[in-house]
Amino acid sequence: MIKDIPRYLVNFVVLITLQILIFNNIQLGGFINPYVYILFILILPFDIPKWFLLFIGFFLGITIDLFSNTLGMHSSACVFMAFLRPFILKIIAPREGYESETYPTVSYYGINWFLKYSLLLIFAHHTFLFFVEVFRFSDFFSTLLRIILSTIFSFFLIVVAQYFYRKQKRR
Image (cartoon, rainbow, N blue to C red; front, side):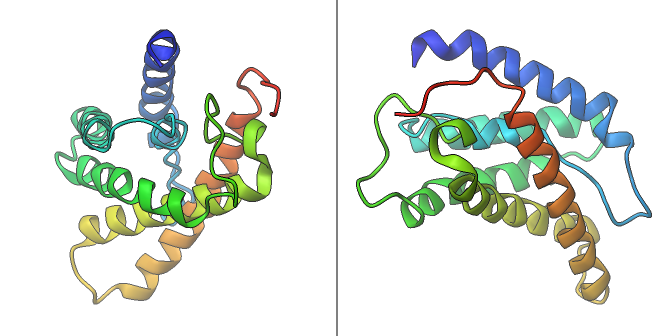
């Protein structure tokens, strides 16, 4: 895992930069807001300690919050997502478990597994984020539509981004 730290630092900087400069400026009809920066939490190794995962989630979210002027919203949504990640991984684990030296990516576990894994976590992140943003249930259905459309669009961009990573052999 130590040898992967430079790669993760580059991923962190690239995803934050793309989110701030490009994806924060995309709002299609007020209902679609892509959040691709959460890919960073999705691709972290399986064996990362839970406390460190929560810390990374907070740091990732607070970085986005600082540049988006939304202090607390993204950091709380990322911590929520990081908190759910081990539980989701346990639920969708292959029968024989996760192989050592693998990562939760499309290239290792295939698109079907990644679909379940990422859609659940992206939906949880977006649900938390958008309801914290609105902070009322009177606009429930419009917020739900926004969550669903943004989840689909973010998922599409995240899957496309998976194919830009260096192809690794499946074990």
